[in-house]
Image 1 (cartoon, rainbow, N blue to C red):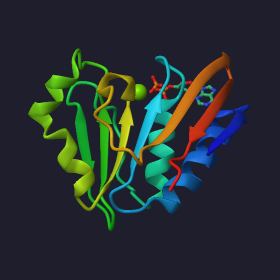
Image 2 (image 1 turned 90 degrees about the vertical axis):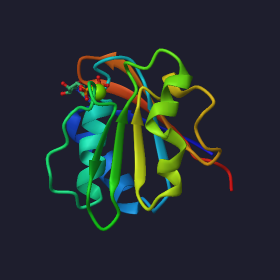
Image 3 (image 1 turned 120 degrees about the vertical axis):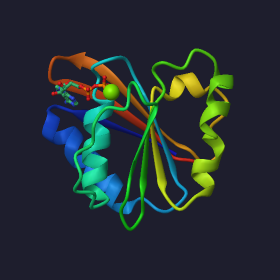
Image 4 (image 1 turned 30 degrees about the vertical axis):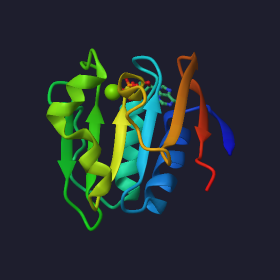
Length: 141
Ligand SMILES: Nc1ncnc2c1ncn2[C@@H]1O[C@H](COP(=O)(O)OP(=O)(O)O)[C@@H](O)[C@H]1O
Ligand SMILES: [Mg+2]
């Protein structure tokens, strides 16, 4: 199933992400696709708010992964620096979605085919300085 949204502001993107975060369940994987500055980190911050994570979300560009503890933990990946999917072996990448948390992955392009089948895919495209197109592909169960 594919759903498309037009975000006309930071608040629009935030509201959508917060709503999705509030519904996130253990073991789910959310993959974020889109160029630099489209709003992947903004989306993740608001998604975390929806999960009732109060800690500040920082960008894990240099660490690849930040974990946030909560009733359902959040695993926030940023794969920008990954050059080949094999590098993900060092992260034990696949183990995260077998765990009890929810994974949100920025630069999911870099993981290529190493995402689970039931990944929710979120494509963000830049329209102009305040507008974004957000397409969400839900897995068909
Ligand atoms: N409608 C919108 N949705 C998301 N971000 C927006 C929007 N309009 C403007 N922005 C701005 O775009 C930038 C997105 O930055 P960021 O979330 O760090 O992007 P990314 O992680 O994709 O590189 C922020 O400065 C944000 O304020
Ligand atoms: Mg980012």
